[in-house]
Amino acid sequence: MSGAGERVRLGIIGLGIMGEAYARIYSQHPLAAVVAVCSRRRERVEEIQARYAVPHGATDYRALLDGPDLDAVVVATPDREHFGPALAALQSKRHVLIEKPMTTSVAEADELLRAARTAGRLIQVAFNHRWLSAYYQAKQLIAAGEIGAPLAGYARKNDTIFVPTEYIRWAGETTPAWFLGSHDIDLMRWFLDAEPLEARAWGRREVLAGRSIATYDVIQAQVKFSSGAFVTFESAWVYPRSFPSIVDSFVELIGTAGHVHLDRKCESLEVSTVEKFSYPKGFLLAEIFGRLRGAFPQCLEDFLFAIRENRPPAVTGEDGRQVTATLEAIHRSLETGRSEPVAPPVPAAS
Ligand SMILES: NC(=O)c1ccc[n+]([C@@H]2O[C@H](COP(=O)([O-])OP(=O)(O)OC[C@H]3O[C@@H](n4cnc5c(N)ncnc54)[C@H](O)[C@@H]3O)[C@@H](O)[C@H]2O)c1
Image 1 (spheres, protein in one colour):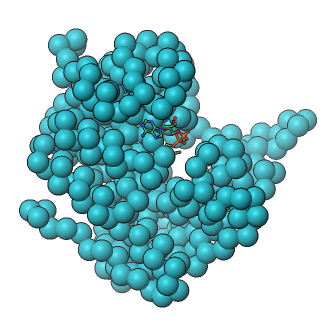
Image 2: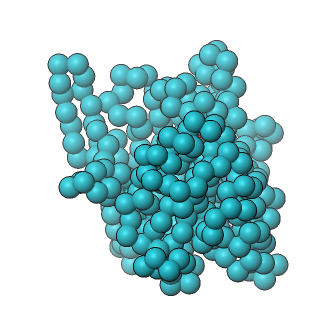
């Protein structure tokens, strides 16, 4: 940590939509100092440096890691490009806050876990939905046995077609399950306090393939957990733009003595104007009295606390690894048409 008021000195790799949000949130935070940023395009690096007064910039993450003194690094590159920067950051003895999904293969996740252990540094995966107050409340009441033993669940996260066609440019290099379903798999594993064991998945490629984006329109996967519960995960990328928010999202669990249902299609606010009807989003990130608030900034703040208090974060690399293992099984099942086993967690010492 720097001498300057014990701020955590941060570097950010990847300066797209999420990377800029990290720069905005951390540059406002009294316990953080954004010291360096990195992205592939020089103009983008300079733009973010100027906008958030960041002293160092680089177009290669190795240069960022070799440069200024940093305590921690944020990895906010596209889904398939988390591994290289995260591994290099851990090898250079920086703590890492890595966007979801942690990696797109179990082998890569295992290498990151080994590197973190060797370096004695933390990995937090940015499954920021755990910081949504209703979800946290649901976790507490499920753990207290208020719905009995969970029997089965359903989780939906479906975006409008705006996301794979305009919001990100790399939709063809990932799938809606990696991009969206990863959040829900993390939540269900957390709610159930159980490990995913096997997955059977089905997917369709019609609409996006027709627009030369080589990915799935929709994936549904059934995952069986070690508790006996089974959960259907649905992720889709083809809702029309007329849908009143960017994402349709809900999670439900049915237990032996009750149920929980979390619906984020509408986050309390419904608006109609002459142009359109909408459900504006604000639970994850909203500017309130000039400061950025919500589950996402709280997730980022807790990473700072974990570093300062030298304790494991709320979402660990091991959690991220099991989400990746589940998604790997789901994607294998899409190929084979069979139920596929999920790689079990690695014992802590190996
Ligand atoms: N937690 C959430 O709620 C949430 C929401 C959206 C996206 N995400 C995740 O965040 C990550 C980034 O998504 P995004 O929407 O910001 O994508 P984006 O395309 O807007 O930004 C990615 C950035 O990474 C840069 N980049 C790519 N490879 C790089 C490399 N090797 N070195 C340095 N920079 C590199 C690109 O130039 C681009 O600026 C993804 O993994 C995505 O799944 C998370």
